[in-house]
Length: 105
Image 1 (tube, one colour):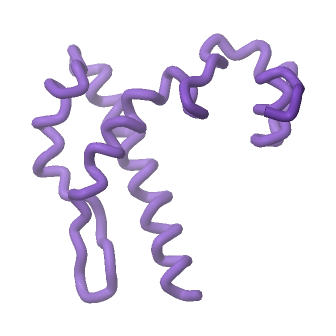
Image 2: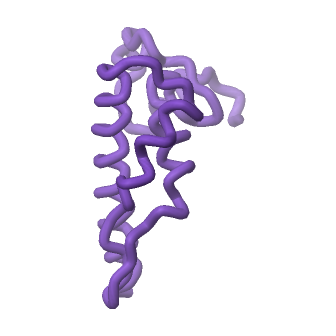
């Protein structure tokens, strides 16, 4: 990657100040994903075949299958599950917004 440090590259990519990133406890990345987000991103990837689709395109994820995923991803407690679910809803919302934006083009 461009010869700079990981922190500098992340600062350039995100627009965040280097100092703020240095203060972050979870800075280390795994394939471009902060370690704190690896499980939620993995669950979102697991759910990619679970979109509900109507006449106007995707309407949201089918959360009926979500209860099977914690065992697969080794999510051990309710707090972690709640965090993953919250992250999943955020990613779902962003994905729907992007899909709708692309459909309008």
